[in-house]
Image (cartoon, rainbow, N blue to C red; front, side):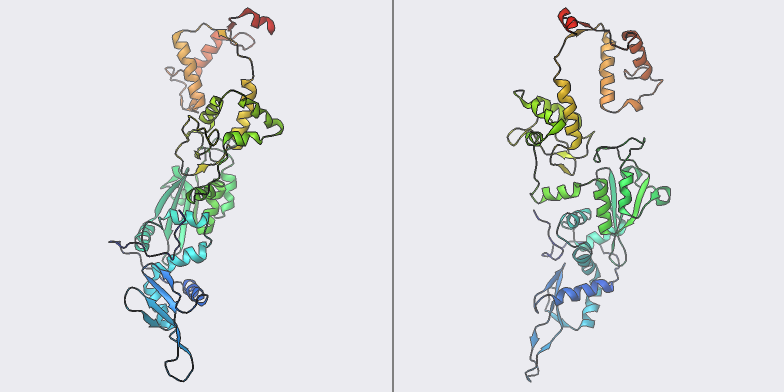
Length: 405
């Protein structure tokens, strides 16, 4: 459903807390006058709880000359005719509603992803201005992937945003590396905390120890989109019912060059392999997106798509690249080997695979030899089972297989 605008019908009123004292900025008042000048007399500009219109021209003196009552304010009672000076005083008394209109209509602007996202941050479509301003005075926190975004309001109704890693929530600004240019985020997302390149920007491997402590609305949006490209845009498309999803088969059919080999994987083999790809790459532990693509329009995958706040509309480049490698590996003719393992060694092999797949190797202490993926236990198993050339000493169960090599 489309986002309601800042001048939509008034939301229900309840026992809201008192909003903070707000001074009406001259820019906001001038913006109201400009907006009214663009409207016909009598066409109201609506705020939460009241409206303002230019006065209708009348001939009160009966001398044939048109005069204007300037402005008409309506707040549920009898409309009040006001001069420009009186209008300024009346709007100053209603500064929270006026500055809220000004922020979204003039500072944020355009009806699109940016506006929808910034309104979502403070629940602008579900809470009254008074409730939101009271909450903003304390700071409204929202999660977006691994980000923690805190929205606040100044005594002039301006929005300010603190954007940081969720792990750094509550850390004083002076203990973090502070930035003010949202494009600086490009360097922050390139490597993880161990200095390894991050090919997938939505992987849950964002490094911390930084903060954008005082961003305006447009810069806050730019910082988030730089850290997680296209996530707000796709989130907004989904909310509007306009998310265009490209499923696996369609995405693979348009691959060419070295990636064209992936199309051979679909020849009469069903889609079990796509389940393996999705389980390997698209699980919540590997990507913060929520997978919306399936095998095709009529065939869902058996693997859960995750529960991230922003959707994934098509197989990404990381998935395609990995699928190309797996296509080649899976094209090999299977062989059966016989290994001699104790029950504990079989469990150890399983533990090692799980630990590597889940990225838990660094969590296993060297002294903890109870863990199957412990480094010393793995080295012992290698010393026992590998030959001098570093090969696992398995024996093909079919002697002809060995001859074919």
